[in-house]
Image (cartoon, rainbow, N blue to C red; front, side, top):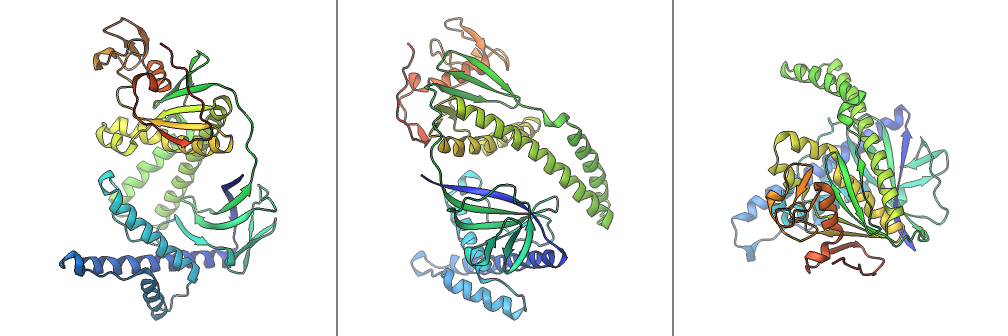
Length: 398
């Protein structure tokens, strides 16, 4: 079976190569800004016309106009990088118009002053050995920690400068890979919380996976101290080299915290997809949840990074021939698993559930995970299969 995989490697460019990469960051940003400005002016000019008379520049002509603009300003560019910025802008506009109601913002101009930058690379500009990655004919040293299969097909990649100032490349590859035969016959429901994950499974076992509180780590303490120092400097409009040095130091610490979270979720998602053939989760609208919550809870929701865990569950389930199913989260925390009675008063506290109808008591998160696992017991609504390699049906308890 052919699978798309992303392989990420650290780059170690020398001074001249850093200048080369930084120039491509700059030229790609300039191309994006010209195209976005062009489209904004065009939208304003066309908005006063009736819809049937509106005519918009196609992206082929826009690409030609962009090349003329870059040449007139004597900005050297790679045509592949500019074309990818054009495609990216087109996708961003489409996303804005289709998901505006969900909070998707209008495309923004890019600045080369930000530490985080990126540009796309294609086949014709890229090749590699175990010691060097060749980008635009310049061989850059890299940490080739993960061998690439000989029959892998290179689809393109992204060169990035992260917030800590380090350079990376992400290669998108198509590889032939057999399913890992890890069938267990057990299915589970997950209730995601800010401090833990409640799991109930068809083998009759309910349990918790505790999430590490990174806000109490030494890195978080260092991050907060630097944040205080930087806030004072910014209030005084102090943008000296020392301020930039402190900002970079803070970014490096933030990166370490992020890596620790990613490592935790990799381990959890790997363990879950090894143990269970089907995993049912709630279809959480996380952005809307953050908007409706108080500031403290909003921060906790952001810190826990549920989206990162869900993404890892999705692609690992595909690799292992497992199913991830999303369901409507409505009433999973208010419904009694035993009798189905729904009331917000069933939940006496954050941790205690006591049914007003049948007097059943349970840990509130475990009760929710049971409702998620046996969702079909209470609803005949269509659910979403994200990864549907299997089609066994659940035997629903009475």
